[in-house]
Image 1 (spheres, helix red, strand yellow):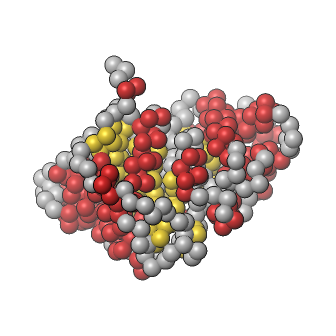
Image 2: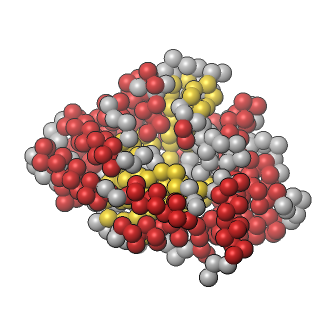
Image 3: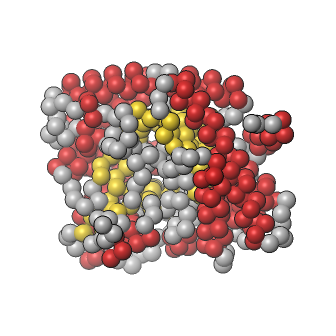
Length: 454
């Protein structure tokens, strides 16, 4: 039972500490939309999504009003489009037509983003996978709400280096085709190792083939709530620090569980998972970096940062798992640079570098996220950074991701403004030494020895 004190406490979290439900995401299977005729396939996709999600936004707004908890985004994720379009897409432009269909129906139902313009190529690449990957720059340039992701590796299969090399080129081309918007297309494109099937967060959301026909996943966020809780235990022991984070994560997850169950009931769609991720926003006080500073660092990036982040991530997961039977997705702490004012401050102070961020990704939820780099960065260099990050995920049996934005026409010392939840970012320097000979080797990096568990 929820008592009066808990209601008052939750209201305080919402009003003063930036607690919100970051997203209600409806996952929709499009496997029954597969057709050898492109126009018929597009019509099936449109009709299935529209019929499934036509009440999603209205339901989210109703829940937010009824419970007084802001629901920032309503989103849709769909079956990876490389699987859906394989039977009818003969070239990249055919896939772009599907992307436009997805964008049109996203606008019709009123959601903020639609994810699933995706391919899963961790071990090998089909013709449809390659066509979709090559279509990504044009698809993201001609749509507003479509998000794209590609899974390039896993602990069980290794890393598909041919696809890693191609995605370096695709990211560069996406940046060029959207240069009039400061290469914004790259903010809607992420590459993964060990991508989860039930992730509600963009740009990496897609509806896994193991999921039900439709599903409701909820992503909760609350960096400001955690920071405020830690202010009351300054100077206390690590035990007190950990207990405080766990208790706070429990409360935040309970809010997500409530919203998820209610949305499931009202929409008549099964509840999937709650993703408890401390996902920051550009708002002051809603920062993961600020939590690290509250733990005892002058800036994110100072010695001790990786240890502090590991502690935070682990306690968030422990608290969240106790609050819901179905915690999934990426649950933990996100460290996107552009979306976190504290991270931006650390970069501008010289405390945080790309190499330190890479070390931090060993213990956070995702990876190198929303990092703006010089527009003249070589495609092979981008592929090398991707390979490094995927290797961390593969060896450590965790999800890692890369969302780099090579901003055409800008260099180190300049900033780029994306607006909204995407925020702004300083252009970070990139190691200039070549990895061309490494990236240009054909084939794949094998799975690690500890992958053999059958």
